[in-house]
Structures are given as structure tokens and as C-alpha cells.
Amino acid sequence: MVLLDTNALMMPAQFRIDLFGEISRLVGEFTPVVPVDVFNELKGLSKGCGRESSAARFGLTLAEQCILIDHERPDQPVDEQIIDYARRENCMVVTNDRALRKALISLGIAVISLKKQKILDIIRS
Figure 1 (cartoon, rainbow, N blue to C red):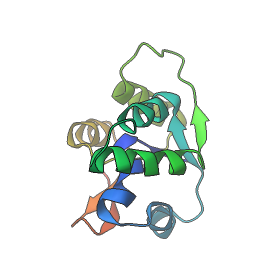
Figure 2: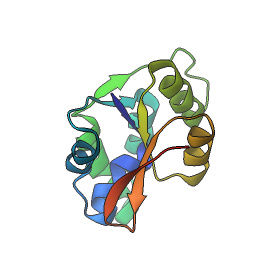
Figure 3: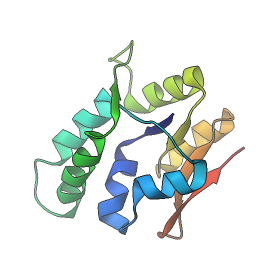
Figure 4: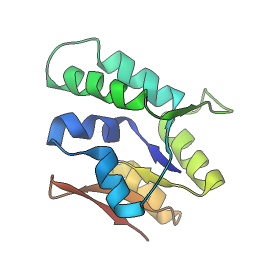
């Protein structure tokens, strides 16, 4: 199981990478999961115009191919939901968000992140 955050789902449109292909290259067969709040974030971002909203619209099409997961505490910020789920399910997280990446790594959770704006790489503590 690999959890994808909002900016991970936007990476293919922003950096022209094959997100699922890159993850497969790193970990083999995997099940992509996306928190419902990440899906909702993408919906909100997709309503505008410009590059970010275009990337969010593409991210929504990718998120629809994933398993959507609800969180037991929807009032909790999305990053905390991601951290809680990754700890509980012992899964990797794909993110390019520096603060989230740092928090995950400090907890011993492996992170898949963009390297040199071309490929994904696994970062471990």
C-alpha cells in the first residue's frame, strides 16, 4: 500500500512523470490509496484556471484510480491524517511537501519524493 498526497497526484502534470510507473519501478506491485480529504483538496484546486488547477484536474483522474480512504477524525488537518494512516498501516507516502516529508522521515516512515524533477526516489530515515 502506498499513500498519495495532493501534490503527488499533481506531479505528473507539473513535471511530466509517470507517477504509477515510477512507484512501480521503486516498490513493485502496489495498491495506491488516497485520503478523501486529499481528493476534496484536488476538487477545490481544480475549479480555477491556470497550471495549478489543470494539474489538480489531472490529479483527480489519477485519484479516481486509487482506493479512497476515510479518516476517523475528519476534523484533523490532512497532513496529520496522512501521518496517522501511514503509521497505523505501515505504508510509504508519496509527497513533495517538505514539511510533511520531514515529519514522516522523523517518524521512520519511508517517503517517495521527486528527485531532480525527473524521477521518484525513496527516502528513509
